[in-house]
Amino acid sequence: MGTRKVAVSAQVRVHIDGCQGDLVLRGWDAPELEIRSGEDLAEDVIQWADGEVHLPELPECRLFVPRQAAVVIEHVAGDLRADGLSGSLEINNAGGDLRARRIDGTLRADEVRGDVRVRDLAGVLELGHVGGDTVMVNLRGGVEVRQVDGEAVLKTALVSGACYNVRARGNVVLKLPLQTNARLVLEAPDGEIHLAIPLEVEEEEAGRLVGTLGGVDERAEVFLHTADGSIALKPLTTYEDGTADRAGSIFDAEAIAEMVRAQVAAGLGTLDVGIDELVRRETERALQQAKRAQAKAERAAERAQAKVKRAAERAQRRVERQAEKADKRWGGARRKRWTASRQTSEPVTEEERVAILKMLAEGKITAEEANKLLEALEG
Picture 1 (spheres, rainbow, N blue to C red):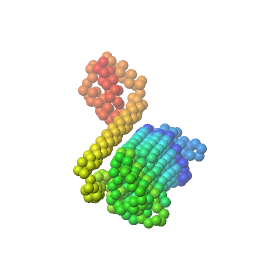
Picture 2: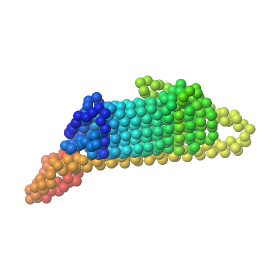
Picture 3: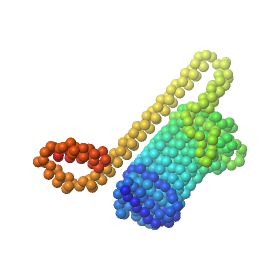
Picture 4: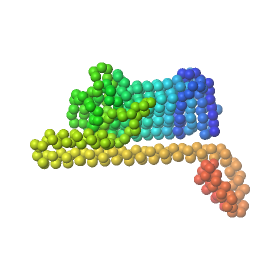
């Protein structure tokens, strides 16, 4: 296990070129930067360049920095977890999931291949492309999400003057307190818009709705767009200590009840329409629902495949790191001497087999190395 640390200022800038595995980033009150890893750390893993701390290449580790530090991360191969920072955090690429909470500065992530879970942010949240789902809770500085391949859920009180823009391929759910001042633009060209909150409608057409909540004072601006799914606007039923109720499916009891009411009202208003027209409309509606269900299933399958692929890549990286460590322990020369000494010996004993298999189980050698050792012992 390796540890490296250095004294730094409270507002130090930290630049991380890359991390080979998962990275846990935590802010603390100590005027120090510290790296803790289960692997050996190079003596020069912490460098200084242009007045900022430069970390060229990190193994899977936990990194502790002063709370007010500004952190830039170029690439994380695995998952990234960040907690307790009052400075800014910028991420260019994360190969796994992103979990962040208690960030007071701006949080920006250009590319996240997995899911994103963010809560308790005082600064602006900026997300470029998210390969999975996104859940955002208690965001006080506004949101700019350019593309979510899965579903997006936003549960927060809206701040007057702030902008909350979210684009996704799947369903989009917005939960907010009833006492809210906001102007909302909701777009679901291939889906439906479910309103469980009374909205003053300004414009309405197929797949698009514009409306307001609250008074005419300074408002929050909300723009929600889904390419293939539906949008649901719901009240935030609990809001204690910055938390809210769990996000459920968009098709919950509230949404279903609203849908039934809309269907009844539509039916009463079209009694003078012929039976054939009603059948045509319902058939078209059923086809649209089937299309959305298929698109949702395809997105879920894509996300599942992506998660399996990311897990396999992480496992492969761990195996490679274990192989490097085993190489250092065993050394080529030592392995050759032992192999040569065994070539004229008797066949491998059961005790020797058990010893080799034990080293394999403990991760000290790879399966390929274990096989070679058994072949060498057997002559």
